[in-house]
Length: 107
Image 1 (cartoon, rainbow, N blue to C red):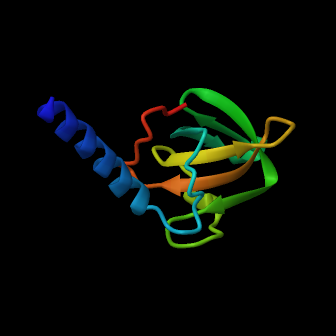
Image 2 (tube, rainbow, N blue to C red):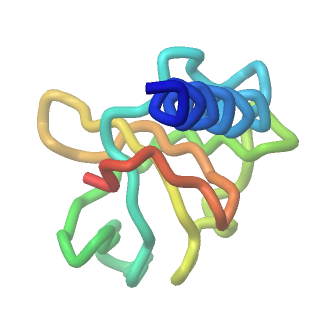
């Protein structure tokens, strides 16, 4: 029983530590959609995240760990991102995440 309690507390503190490493301008409630960028096709405004193709808005807002607004050129193969879809299913906002980021879902 004590070992189970210790294990649960360790997981809670580890999750808190991960959340605390994200800057204040990132959503405190976390992200619904995260994944690894597999390809970016600038000429088509298309991006592939976790093997799923998406279009992205010409006005997409990109946030980095050091800046509330970053250049879209920082979004490239292998980068871990969180993203928000608009009503037309285009990506309208993205957050660059640390390489070791894990929310347990990656969906």
